[in-house]
Amino acid sequence: MPKQTNDLCDCRLIHRQAVEEARASALAPNETASLAQTFKALADETRLKILWALEKREMCVCDLAAMLSLTESAVSHQLRLLRNLQLVANRRNGVVLYYRLTDNHVSQLINITLEHLRD
Amino acid sequence: MPKQTNDLCDCRLIHRQAVEEARASALAPNETASLAQTFKALADETRLKILWALEKREMCVCDLAAMLSLTESAVSHQLRLLRNLQLVANRRNGVVLYYRLTDNHVSQLINITLEHLRD
DNA sequence: TTCTTATCTGAGTATATGCTCAAATATACA
DNA sequence: TGTATATTTGAGCATATACTCAGATAAGAA
Image (tube, rainbow over all chains, first blue to last red; front, side, top):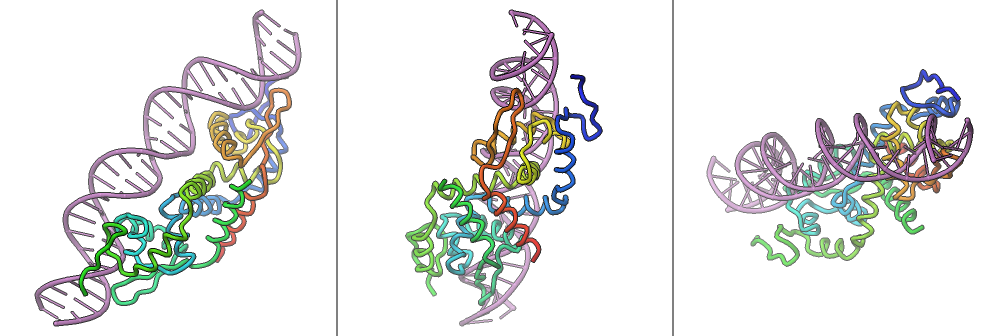
């Protein structure tokens, strides 16, 4: 069989139609980027522990630091990342900032993944 | 107010009870690690594109490479990672390996996150 | 067997990122 | 004002990782 010509890329191509359909139904570039960014936020043990804790109660930075045995600086950096993605929000009471989850999507994502891991 | 003593860590501690409750209900270490590992698999644009395509149809390595304009080596490395986490499986037909999603959890995770991003 | 194709693998490299450290803000209170 | 506390911020470092490249397997055909 001669090597198929290929105007889609430099690679071999066995099932032209499957490739074209996959490209047609692909996610928009900005959607892919946003998805990756959000999953990246969940792809770190420290941030997962923070989110899991905030699912039950709002907490301030120094409490989270105590819970995690981390510096407040480290926690603050992670909270900023989560805040920029609008996964957490905060309210101020004097000098203390209380963080909470913005919606229940994070809980859903963690629970579905836990379910997947049990199989 | 005197600085509170703190037997949980070296950090300040404002709400002792909140910290203790958070620690009591924390995820098991191996659960946290597995969760992070799974989300890490989703936290990359190439792997997301692969998973999104496999949600619709099974595909072989060279088709995925063509679809993504990547080398087959690069795709193969990513598929190995996804296979090790049992997010994808494959079947062999001669020399060709066809990859597919192992279950529908990945679809759920992507769709919930897309929903979150629309808010 | 030998050749070809599809896929896999290990090493190397460039980039991304989580933490620490030092210093800057922000708010409350004397 | 000035001081104390809670949090934030930027720079630097050490590790993780996505891709490339060269070469190794695996299965079918000649």
